[in-house]
Image 1 (tube, helix red, strand yellow):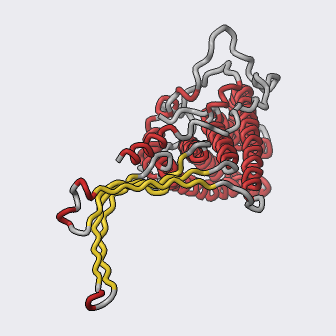
Image 2: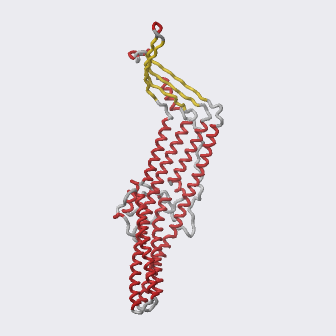
Image 3: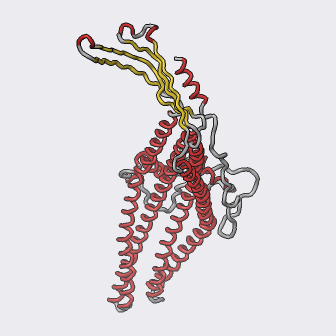
Length: 466
């Protein structure tokens, strides 16, 4: 039993040596501050550090109760998220398997045997019974190979966890965007229906004026053109609404309660109106995709240590302690005790360059992981910068488009009144109606951009998932 204890002690002491390269986080390959200029809002004034978006849970960010309920449904049922969760569990299981190799495995054994040789007077019979406990071929990790492999699996597991968190944030963002898009499509459908009804009324009035000799056939044809255009748009937007709902239900993993669907985008606040400003680009380091890339880099770093350790001798230990006897009645007596201890050493002499190839592969993989990590940060910087550029000008665009709609509505009302009173041609009323219709459609598009931009900012800044 003392030999078994020695193996356990050696197992605890093994792995103290590490041949992993000293890990140094690569320098952040982006500017320390966000871009500035005409497209960007001015930086926040005053001292202090703004709270991180990652500290803002999605249930706090999305203020629309119906949207929160639908996001919750997606988090419970979305298949992509289920795949991500299972990938995390698989990575954790692989880590547990590798981690188990850092300590000896104890096995209880028992056996019985019978043999006979010769015949007659020369016949001999042998019986053997044994029972014991032992360690089989445990690698004493004197140069840290097993420990390095364990660290590599741990970092892979942590990378999968961050990937799952990124999938969760992405799903929340996709559901919110699909919900807002559905609201915008409903608004576009309503505007098209209103324009179609108005155009039909104008066409009816124009036909009456034609029968009275006041209007011309050209006026009737032009009025019908607006009606048919709006009619076609009603059919198109009806399809878009159905498709937007299909997209939303794919994300939620099942049917959405119709009572929770928005009837339009106007007058609804889907999210918080603002996000923390004045943050440095260091916030990118907490994005889950960036953290995942860094864990993958650390895993590649540990694999270099394992490849280096393969150049050194491998010590394997096998030990067993127990009892052996030819009769079961004597098996557990003191004179039946048995002990075996078999250390072995394997020294690499010539492997046709396999170890060097593995080391070169590990180094190349680590260099690629560095480049991937840096590219992930650069991509994150661009995503945030693009979203900030849109945020910096959207309020001005929205205000201008709302003013355009008001002016177009006034122009249409006046032109229609002048035509009805016979003071103007139908052409001016027609142009005003088309201008109003286009301005209303554009306003819905700008409102969609405004709401979606906040959702995008929340996602690219690493929004919280609690």
